[in-house]
Amino acid sequence: MPVLSVSSSSPHANRRWSQLLGERYALQWSAELSAWFDEVAWQSWRWGEFCHPVTPKVLLDDAPEPCWPPLMPPNFLPLVGNNQGDWLCLRVGLTDPDGQLGSQSCRDTFGDLVPTDVVHWYHGGGDWLPWGDGLAEALLFDWSVRRLPSGEVRHADPAESSEETAETHAWGASPIESWMEQQLGDAARVMRPLAGSDLVAAFHERDLSHAAVVCQEAIHATPHDAGDSAWVLDRCLRNRVETTAERFGELAWPHELLGQDAMHRGSTQEASRHFTRALLCSRFTDQSVRLKTSWATSGNDAAVKFPLHPTNRWTGWGADVWATPDGSGEERGLSALHRLPVTGWNRNAETDDVSGDAAFVNVDPSAWMHEYVDRLVGSDEGCDLQDLTRWLIRSSETALARGLKTESLRLAMAAGWDVGAEPLRDYGGVLEHYARTCEASGYESLSRLGWTHRRCFRARYGV
Image (cartoon, rainbow, N blue to C red; front, side, top):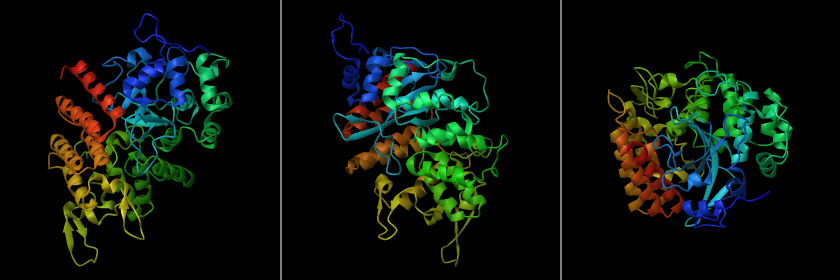
């Protein structure tokens, strides 16, 4: 297969696009992405929803038009679109202590290993979901999703589509087919005729698109009129959601579903553990519209995050009275938040040592959680997003001053993409703080992506 290189009229003649993009973003691509940029990203196909690739030439721009800040997180690089505003994005991030971000890896040429995966990003609200460790895996899911149970439920409701699917075409030797087989072997060919539970089983047997497939299974199990009492998981689905929560600890929806399921089984301690962990996940990972949990975060009594809704009294969130551990008295409001199990961090049960997210703040985790949740709950008028954003930025600056670079970077990301920020113009400063924090932390690739999003924000909104 011929490898496309830059035009001879370019000052970068005889350079591969993957090389130019690697220098542009300070990343060494996986073999999959190198082949994509050099051979496939210039092609077109008609299979699935996502069939509009971003060309390497566009990604080399100072402000690539497909980047969509501020809803699109600043560590996302759009690769393939659906021509409706949604994107399959490369997610570049630090290793998460509660879950691997993908086995396909790039290396930051100025820092440590930076794992990546490919996520579906929805422009209608900024929600995102991992679709695969690599782009080929994500595209296979895209080509297959309409043959999965409830595959027509892409957003809030079932949608009609005239898009052509892979199974309507004879498998041939086009560039993208050859590239898919190089990355996934015969998976696309073998899975093409499958549908329903057989297709689900094939994805699990090959361990492909795990989070996306389990989410689709959960959607299929969700009653159309689901409310706060609808979630009771069967054993098989519960096991798969638990695996998702372990492997993708940064996603809120598995923890929220497991918390509801545990509550309905009468296991309040287990529910508390899951809801505590869900609080540390971005609101943009809850899939609340498709999983019918948006009742808790919309309306007159809306909470900024699902576990904080006043009706979730089984975990104590929003309750007026807390019982003290010895039963001798009462603690009111959120002042007793530290009584909850600290499962957002990796705690060694024998030594009581904490690691991972515990270093997130370099303080007593329960004390930090108390202040964090107190700000999320806010006053009678609800959460003050400006106050929360300023506090997270201050916490990020404090962590950086203490030499806690990774923790500072996580807090800088949370300032804009935990529950969002308001007003829109404030994102200019949030993006600049994030990019500078990446620089100071030694992650040149994340810094370059961050500054790219900052320029795109200015180009879109003039701010």
